[in-house]
Image (cartoon, helix red, strand yellow):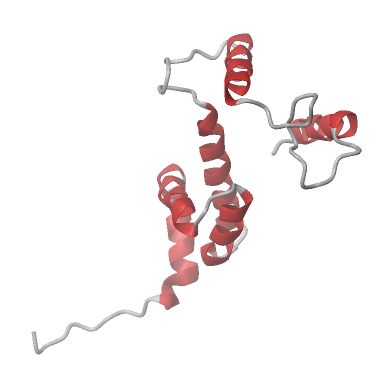
Length: 140
């Protein structure tokens, strides 16, 4: 997260969430209930318009869910660059983004590899010992 975005979240927290328990929704309406999907989508489209980012139409993006994808891919890439084992990083990221299983988060490993091919080499160097080289079986 950029410094400016972190500062914006800190201001939001101070203004709107200072008396709320950690279990409460971070973004909510005046009643304290979660924001409705339609409202969030409408605000997202307004922000895209103001930022002059074209929208390809429903389902063509950029979609709100693309933010989640980008977050997961960049988080995994950073953790690999920092030397964190993916077997440690995946369950943490899975819980953080609210997935029901680590399997749902594993697809981001492929996306991370596609977006950051240099990381494959680093992971291979770090984790090559996990799968030992198999000698060819001469009896087959």
